[in-house]
Amino acid sequence: MSDQRKWHWPDYFLFLMRTVWFTFNGYAIFSSTIGSEKWILLLWASCSYIIPHLFYRPGLIKFQYYLMAEVLLTGSLFIYLSSQYDISVTYSFLLVPILTLAYACQVKPLIWLGPFAVIASTWAGSLFTNQDFFKLFVDTTIFYGIGFCLGRMTIVNKANKELIASIEEKNKDLEYYSKKIEELTIKEERNRVSQDLHDTVGHIFTSVITSLDALPFLYPADQKEAENSIKEISDLARNGLNDVRKTIHHMSPTDHQTLVESVQELIADFMKHTSTDIQLNVKGEATKVSERVKFAIIRCIQEGLTNAKRHGQATFIKVNISFEQEELIVLIDDNGNGCHKLNLGFGLRSMKDRISALAGTVNFDSKLNNGMRITCIIPMAKEI
Image 1: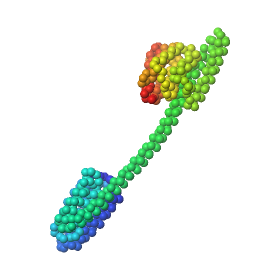
Image 2 (image 1 turned 135 degrees about the vertical axis):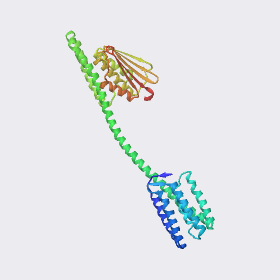
Image 3 (image 1 turned 60 degrees about the vertical axis):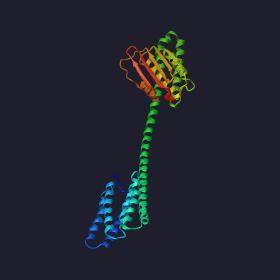
């Protein structure tokens, strides 16, 4: 058993008690002996006091070596004094090791050394000193109890300090993570608003620009139809403005509709203003999805349509929605220009972020002159 800890106050109390006890007993031995042998016994007692503390000091505690030194030196001194002299304090030399043993041995199996040492030392004391066993047992038990209580107090004190230090450390971590979460929340909210505005504004402006581009050809051919188209463009811009306002106020523009109804409305509106042929296919039972999933799917389809028309110049777009048992699959396939190497712009990155936030995946597949295919897969079980 080795410990690199600093001493606690019970350690200093034990050291003080041991010092006073050895000083008292050493003086008694010195006064009770004569000749040169008293100096030998004094040196022996001094070694019994000093050497064990080489292994039990602040910053270094090797209890097994301390105990061995204590038993060998103090025990041998006790046996020698008991056999050669009739000194009343002889047995007292065993009380300090008992106290220290009880103090240090607080966990199993070492804790059983204490009671064993109490019985063994009491038996040795009654054998060598001819004192009453019961009286020696009471004295030994008192010292053992003092040491054991000091040991428990040290353990509890140490555990409390470690607990307080751990709580303080965890509080620091919580404060740190709280700040990080706050920063991430702000960042996520900014990204969400920017994504929503990009999808909404991009969709509206694509429809408006496409309609405006057609006006110079429509106006000479049919002035009345052109005026109706201008009115529709005006209505579209107003609806777009309302959509932007709802986005800013965290409102979904189709809260009262199902996912399929919202997609149908979105596609009808896009077809009307861009003259793009769009085919919607719904597979499986159209189960109800959460507002979060519905909003993400609508924005993704909106971005897919806008991207196909603006960048791919597509004239035909196919949208498939499959309600599977454990996942929702959305496929957006167009006949646009396509490309060899796809670079994700803000819109497609936003689409990927939206689906990833729902524990889903997005795949983009595009070939030059062969259009583009977007596949979104959302696990329904994760959302539930």
